[in-house]
Length: 108
Image 1: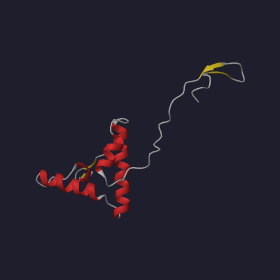
Image 2: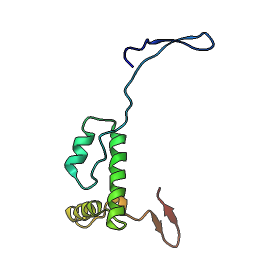
Image 3: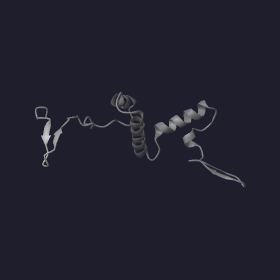
Image 4: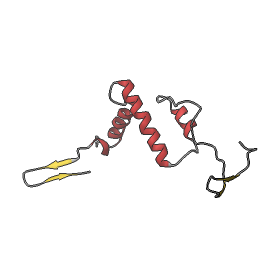
């Protein structure tokens, strides 16, 4: 591909200057969802923080599927969070609604 000319003339006579780039495809295999070191090695210095969080969520979903519905690593984190904060639940585990006889509040 490198020895091909970069100039290209289309069927309509328009001349193009082609730029070659490597595809951003992972061909090395997959990340073991149970290995911290594997996750760090595969994601170090690659992509944005959003990409990292998306990959982390995908691996959490894989662990939950393998463990029968709940991610044990995430549940362990939630327990430690509550223990360190005197029993206060993690914001992800808190109820999203509050209701009494006068008002109902739904948090999104």
